[in-house]
Figure 1 (cartoon, one colour):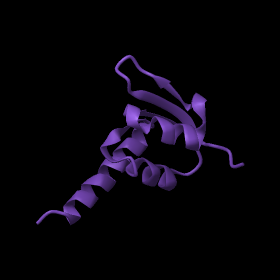
Figure 2 (cartoon, helix red, strand yellow; figure 1 turned 90 degrees about the vertical axis):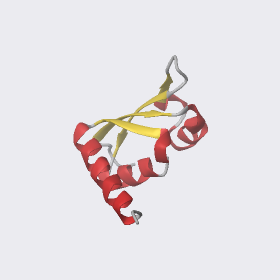
Figure 3 (cartoon, one colour; figure 1 turned 60 degrees about the vertical axis):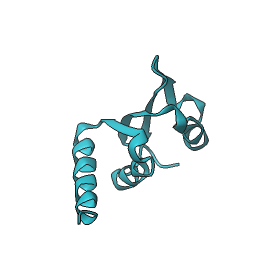
Figure 4 (cartoon, one colour; figure 1 turned 120 degrees about the vertical axis):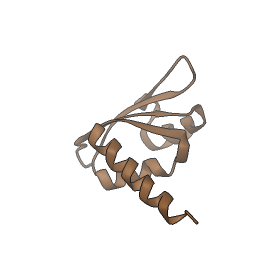
Amino acid sequence: IFPGNIRVKALFDASCKWRLVEEFGTGCFEEQPDGKLLFQEDYTNKESLVSWLMTFGSRAVLLEPESLREELRQTLAETLKRYEV
């Protein structure tokens, strides 16, 4: 219903397949030779995108856009600092 203005490219572990299908449909990824899933879709909001990706933990890697990769890295670094003893 809302136009996607952020072209997302991410690599997911195979264990994420059914969640991706449920949320975006069967055409949202290409299975890679190593079993990983190359996800390519448009997203509408960068804050929601970052939050959504974080729900996958280490099972997802944002490849593009590069600017959001850096933002995600900073968010994860700040989160990690909160758990340091």
